[in-house]
Length: 517
Image 1 (cartoon, one colour):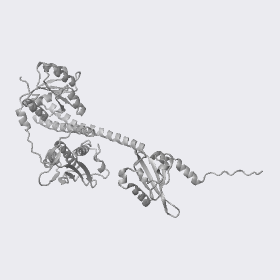
Image 2 (tube, one colour):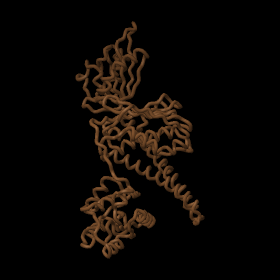
Image 3 (cartoon, rainbow, N blue to C red):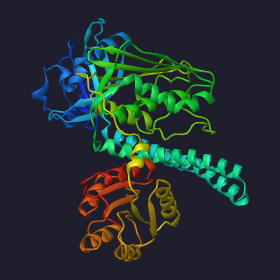
Image 4 (cartoon, helix red, strand yellow):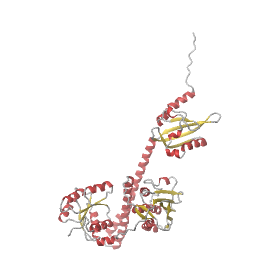
């Protein structure tokens, strides 16, 4: 009887390695032949990409890439780079069998035999989609926190001089010079506050596709001139040189005049903001195919290469010092680009680097036919033709009500004030006004309730009721219409809006024409 023990033969090192690779599920590990065709497939590859071994072996690995990557010949570039550098690593979107995309980290390494002949490529892919989403959420949260801090800073900036100006006037009530000085400060700073709020509302409307555009022929040369004139005080303070290069002859585009002015104003304002004192800004316009191409170039601080592709993203700004000499929320360029695109145009940005200036180009479609010039009466003429109107202002904010009433009287009309809904209804029933400027957010009885009660009572049924509110969303406008209002003003109400309202009411036969006193 033999005492020899049986010999147990285990797997070889090569077999152990093969088993290890085949059973890894967190990584797609597979081989490509020298031409880029799949030669092996592990369980991780099946798990991540969705293909079974018999479905994918023999097919070219470009099947995992998006159409735009294939158009750029990216799969071939990866193999060439791996051969040249000995290894290639990349992150980007890849395709699964079902057509869905995932964010992949890819490492490709060329494999040679002992004669240094290329046998193919080892390819390892990791699915980093979850990590990318987490990082994106963290970036979004960080940017939102930065934006909120910036918003608080930008709102406090104009509020501080307004408060100081008011305190000076309180201490010098009989000093005309102090009063004039305070008026100028308050006017400038309230304009800044209004611009900040308008920018935020524009971002909201644009990102939700709620912007309405009135397309008409727009004179590019005149628009550029008006934009520069509006920014002239800031340009002169900085002693900046503005150079304008325009083609001979008319240059008209088919667009919304107000929005074109907003786009160009954002670009020029941006150039003024980031160009040092004594710098140079060039505004030029040319015709390119069927578009007017308008460029704003400056000799300012420029942009780092990594900022250029992100400059149109929301809340993105270049590095600024703690003093933040020039304010802003980082939304102007986003608004400008979206508005250009909504009007069938494009916008691009470029810079040779930090300290080397920036150049922004907007292209908007040319007008297809010449339009007849339109004339409209001046605000002075409109006011002169409008007879006196009885106006009731209803607002629980006493300062807002009284200042708006003072503005109405300065325009030559009669104003009365109420601070809640019940008082407004009582006064309107006793002596109906021609028009009521009605705040929505009243205590107790809302502006909607007041409007409905006005419509129900025969004494006040014909009062022209205009909603005055700080809300400017399209949903708010619909609610105003449904409640029976005749119009909707977003605070702050301007003299121009009131003049337009009064001139409309004065037209013969208009539904809101005044009743005899």
